[in-house]
Amino acid sequence: MRSTKTTESWIEQELGPFGPAAIKPYSRTRFATDGSALLKVYVGIDPEGRRLREAATVARAALRGISVPAVLATGNDEIGSWTAFPVVDGTPCSVGTHNATEEYIGYVVAVSDRLHRPTAGANPGSGWAAWRAGSASSRQFLLDQFSPRCRWLPWWAVLREALQPIDSHLVVHLHGDLKPEHFLVDGELLHVVDWEASARGPAVLDYTDVVFHLVRDLLYEGVPPGRIPVDLVTRLPFSGPVLAWRLLLWLDRRRPQDIDLVTTRAVYRLAAEEQAASAYMSLAQTVALLRAAGVPR
Image 1 (tube, rainbow, N blue to C red):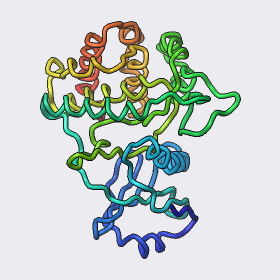
Image 2: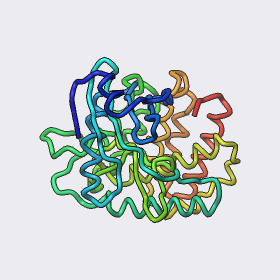
Image 3: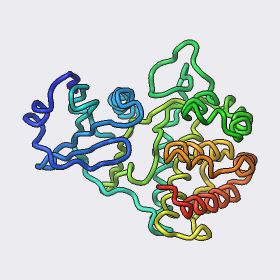
Image 4: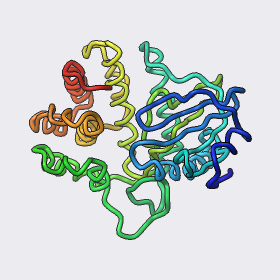
């Protein structure tokens, strides 16, 4: 891996030329015209931190037997914080049918068996770095991910209290953004990509990401709430408070006014739910209402 403060011309000469950028909320990705490499430029929230986390984490994930794309080069210069990866073969997982969703959940469980192994001395935080003195609790780590304005909203105290039990959960290494497009299937091989949100915390954070993305994305593709396959995700570890946190974090990162669309009562009901199936149906109904109100995906 090469890490340096080079210029875009070096990247173009060594790995390019690259085609037009695909724009996402937190990255700009360009593929080499020969199909051999991709260049990711991190934008939005903490681009340099996300670059460093992803570059460090993929190497450690490989040591756990997870197939990941190696880092070809990484740096921070006039084009921003960036990393170049080889293009790995594979088709993103689908959740378009019941069987495809069931297969995807099977991949999640298989990867999690390797990913969530107990790690001595790990404490909650971003990335997979070693233990650091004075770190936050799991609850505080989650609350710190909200923008400062959220501390003054009516539901804040409810969520803070509801999250307290997760401090007793075992801290493991997390992918931080598990969803179908980050699982690439290549025959018998499974590659896991996009590790920039890697973290340390309770395993239920990764599982909640899986459920949240599944429910939200199906709803935004037009699937009615009653047809969301919640039966397939009830096999995953569940936490009502973490599910409420994930919903609110999504809204906090959308338009400024979107966070005001969720009531304190709705947050309390979701956080207090003890049955996974009921909680996921409640989540689906809430997200459907938010979609109808114009909240962007």
